Length: 222
Image 1 (tube, rainbow, N blue to C red):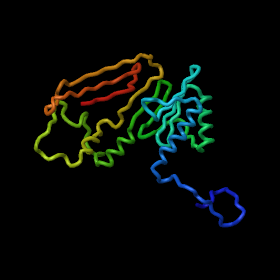
Image 2: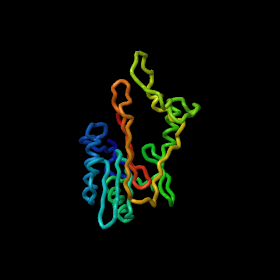
Image 3: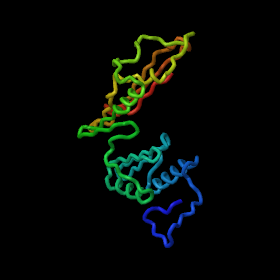
Image 4: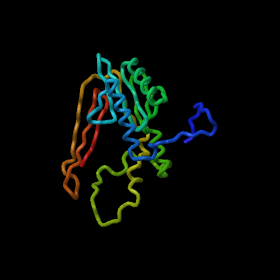
């Protein structure tokens, strides 16, 4: 291991003895996550039981949330002093790089204004279309006729199912808007197609949950 740049040593051509390297080992991610989560808990953050990558702090009407993905962090809240304190603490431990206001994270593009925040995946969608050769394809509202009933038969399966699943040319700019003035009213809607599967007679059930007029959770399941 070469001596890091900036380290002053007495003799030329000296080297550092590395007792154990973490890079490339299976426990790297676990060790990193353990050290990071413990440091956040020391600051009063509580780990979510529903999503272990989410840490929140709520005290004296001040709320701060921190989301972790490997070594990328998203920090938000209504207490700028606590946010600055957390960033200073993490920089002292890990030497972080502050990228400023959130604009792009894990394929999500974030645009903000006084009226609220808009989330979309335009770049990610166009990248998928480019990878699958569908940039020049004609867009449609849905990838198949709505009244079509799929079922198992004796024909050979489609060679590449991902091509069908990624047919999103008709909606690359689909977005979700989160208003800054919505009411704190929780609304939920659900529906089912009532045993419409020809093979199993099972139903496809879906639900969506709104906080005010902002969509916060949705799912469909057979």
